[in-house]
Image (tube, rainbow, N blue to C red):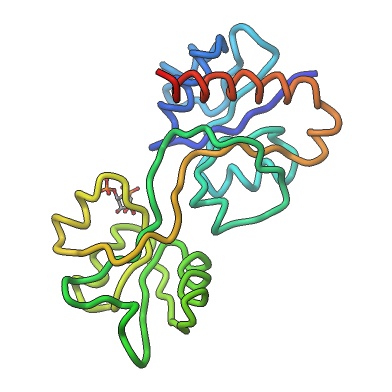
Length: 213
Ligand code: PRP
């Protein structure tokens, strides 16, 4: 049976496609993609879609995609109706708590305002520390919010740390380690178990190989 795979476009895209290629999948059409959004594998009975991270979960939950590759950050914030099968160990980054130097939001007493693209993650993290917060949803360049005084701190993704550093922000805690994960639709897992397990096994082999080399 054919497989449909939703790939997250943007930061994870290149590493994911490279990994599939290294496993022997025919991903050539994803290399010169133009404005196309659906790409047949040139070697196997697979089609790939390129979607935004949140939509990757939506497509997998609805079974339009049997499999998805998406960041753990999006999984922590979003839906839960899928199987999380494999850590691909690519796109590694962290959820951090940051603020202006000398202003650790974790030490603030009274009303705490936190800016984040990930309000559920921010709330859950601060609740785990016994702190009630107000979250202000920010859609991009979250680092700007504390600099302008909108919030006391942020919960955001840090990869190299350059954005924080260049804006005078300090990391006060790591909330979670993040990387790309393979998720699978629950019904697809029953109906297409052989195809899905073959894919997982190929990717798992590549994760192990990358760790050893
Ligand atoms: C992410 C994140 C930080 C930045 C961190 O934003 O929200 O702003 O990357 O990367 P660094 O630690 O390597 O500097 P992204 O670039 O995805 O864009 P956005 O702010 O528009 O969401």
